[in-house]
Length: 456
Ligand SMILES: Cc1cc2nc3c(=O)[nH]c(=O)nc-3n(C[C@H](O)[C@H](O)[C@H](O)COP(=O)(O)O)c2cc1C
Image (cartoon, rainbow, N blue to C red; front, side, top):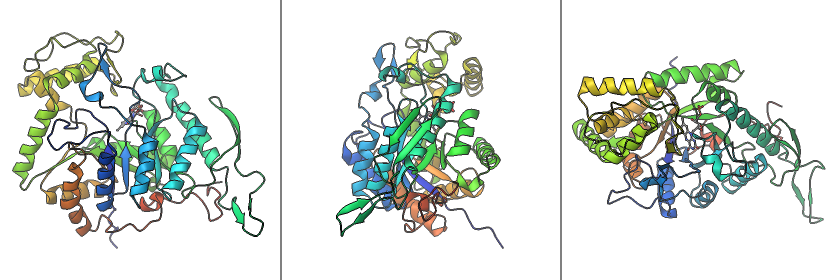
C-alpha cells in the first residue's frame, strides 16, 4: 500500500514594512489600514489557507539615532487586528506573534482565550522571545534576558498560560433557565501557579474556549529554541526554506519531539517563503531579479551589512567593494531593533568576502546574492505547485508560511494560479472540513469530551 500524500499546510504572512515589502510599488496598499489586513485574510480564506499570520515588532529599528525609513509606517496591535479579522472570516486560523518575555501569563491567557471564543476556535499564538536587547526599554520589566534564560521564561510563561486555560472545564458553565442562574463548579476558573518567574493564583475570567488550548507556534532556531518547540509547540515558523538546511532542521526537530514522548506528527514545520510567478520560467526569474534589485537599495544594503559589521558603514559606496575593515564584535550593538541570529560576525564577513571575490560582486550585489532568507518559490504556477508539493512530500517541511512582496494584493495571484494546481494534486483541501484551526491542521485535540486535558 502506498503512503498517503501529506497535505500541504499554508499560512499567509503579513510582517509589516521591511525590505521584503515593495512599499514603493504603485499597487502597494497601506501597511496599517484595516483594508490591508482584511484583503489578505479574505484572499487566504478564498485559497483555503490554514491561517493568517501576523509577525510582531515591539520596537522600531534605528541606526545612529534615526529610525529606518521603512519602519515609520508603524505596527498596529496584534490582538486588535486579529479580533477584527475574526468578524470578516469564517474558517481561517488567526495566528498572532506575541512576546513571552514582556507579557504576563494572565493577560496572554485571557486575550488568546477571548480570541478563540470570538473566532469559534481559530486562535493561534506564535510564542517569540524577541530578537534584541532594546525591546525591553519599552517595558516596565526593562532590560533583557540573557539568551539562555529567554526560553526558561518562555516555558514557564506557557505553562502558566496553560494552567489558566485549563482552569475551566467544558461543562463548567451551565445556564439553568428555570432559575435564571448560571451553575458553575465551585472551583471553576480557580488556578494556582508557583514557579521561579511567576507566583500567581486566583480565578481566571474566561470560560474554556472552543480549542481549550489555542494552537502554539514557535519561532527561534537555537538548540534551546528547538527543545522548547519540540516539547511545547504545535508548529514552528522556520527560516529554512531551502534544502539541505530545511530537511536537516525538519529531521532534527521531529527527533527532538519524539525524544520528549510526542509523535513527530504533533509538530508541523512551516518555513517562511516568498513567491514570484511568471507565464514562463524565464519571465519569473527575470521578475524575481527585478524585485530583488528594487528591494535591496544601496541604503538597505549598507544597513543590512551594518548588522554584521556592527559599525557605521554609511560612507561606503554600495556599488563599490565590501568594506576592507573588520567587524567590531565588542562595540555596543550598532543597529537597534534587530540582532543577528548568527553571531559569528568574523566568519560571516569572511564568507561574504569570498563570495564577492568569486562572483566579482559589488557590496550591494553581495547583499542581493546572499541575504535571501525567505526561500523564494520562483517559476510558472505549475513549477511553483511542483516545488511546494515535492518539498513537503520529501520532508523539507509540512507546508509554508507565504508572504508576498506586494501587500495586500500579491497573494491573489498565488490563490488564483497556484492553489487550484495544488488542489488538483490532491494536497490542498478544496473546502474546510474541521471546525477549529487545530482540526484543520490535523492536530490532535488535546481535550477529551469532558474538556479535561487528554494528557492529564
Ligand atoms: C522565522 C522567524 C521569525 C521570527 N519572528 C519574530 C517576530 O515576528 N517577532 C519577534 O519579536 N521575534 C521573532 N523572531 C525571533 C525569535 O522569537 C527569537 O527571539 C530569536 O530567533 C532568537 O532565538 P533563537 O536564538 O532560538 O533563534 C523570529 C525568529 C525566526 C527564526
